[in-house]
Image (tube, rainbow, N blue to C red):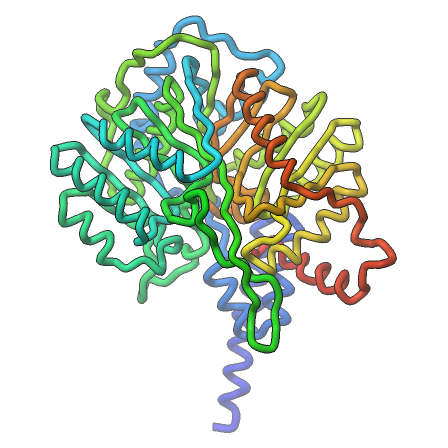
Length: 488
C-alpha cells in the first residue's frame, strides 16, 4: 500500500510526458506549443485536464467527407458559373484567388449591403424579413438567449413554421449553456428543426468543448442574408447594457453596466449563395442531411452591379486558417490605410507581424478596442501586444462609449470585411467563424464612416506600456499572462 502513491505519481508523469510529446509533434506555432508545455509542467493535474478539454489539435480531423462537401458546394458553384460580366479587381486578384482555392469562397457580384451598428434597427429588419419569408429560414447563431428579444425572434419563427415555411436553427451548445433547454424544446414542438452545435454532455465530455460555432448568420428564402457580430440577446438592442468587471475588491469583482455596440450586415444579391452554403455545411454537420435543392439558391432578380463579395468561413478542422491568412494579406498589400475594430486583441504571430510591418512601411494602421472588456485575463494579456504595435507606429484607439463588440476591417477605400471573427487566437484557430469580404468602393467608404464615427468616442493610447510611469509589477504580470494568450 505504501507504494500506491508512487505508482500513481509514475502513471501521471508518463501521461504528462506523453501529452507534451503530442503537443510537440503537432508542430503548432512555437508560442502555442510553449504555452501548453508550461501548463502541463507547472499546473499538476489541472494542466492535463485543461489540455484534454482545450488543447487537442483537431485541424487534421475530417468531420465532413469530401464527397458530401462537393455536394454541398455544387449548387453554389453552378450559380457562380452563371454570373455574367464578372470583373475581379486587379489589386485584390491574389486575395480572391486565395479564398477561392482554399475555402471555395466564390466571388459573387450584384450585391446590396445594409450596415447596422445597433441591434434595434438590425432586429427590426430581421423580424420584418422573417415575417415576409415564403419558403425557408435558416438561422445559425452562437447565442440565442431566452430573454425578451430571444422569445420575440422564437415566436416569429414559430409563426412561420406553422404557415409551412421550413425553419432550421443551429445554436452553439456552449454559447447557450445558460439558456433553459425548454426554450429550444418549445421551438421543436412547434415544428422548427433545432440543433445544438457540438453539445457538451457527460459521458461524452471531450476536447471538442474548445471548438465552438461562433458564426452569426441568417438566410431567408435564399434571397436575403445576414452576417456579422450580433447574437440574439437584448444587450444588442440600443440602450441595453451588460455588466463589465472593472476591478477585483475584497468583496469580489466591481461591475459597471455599459452599453453594447456591434456591427452586422444585411445582404441581398449573389453572395447570399455563399451564406447559404456556409449554413448548409453546418446543417449537414449537426443533422447529417444533405440539403442541395435549387430552391435554396433562387435566381437573383435585383439590380445588376459589380459589388463583389466573398463569404469566407474558417474552422479548426479546415486545413488552413483562411480568415487569418486574409487579414495578413490585406495588411501587407495595403497602400494607404487599414482600420480595424475588434473587442479582443490577442493576435497570432503572423497578424502581429503584418500589422507592425504595414505601420513601419508608412501605412496608416489604426486599431480600435474597448477601453474595458468583459474578460479581464484577455485584457491583461492584450496590453503587452499593444506595446509592440504602438512602438511600430500603429494608432490604438480606446472606445469609451460602452463595450465595442464590433469585428470589422476597412482598407484603402476599396476593401472591407465584417463578420464574427475577433483578432485573437480563438477566432483564428479554434472557432467556426464567418466573414463577408467586400470589394466595393461605396461600401468601403460607408464602413470607413462607421469607423470614423466610432473614433469620435475614443481616446488615443499615446504612451508605450514600457514608460517610466508604468509599474514594474503590473508589466511583469501582464507579460506572464501573455504567455498563456494562445490558450485564452
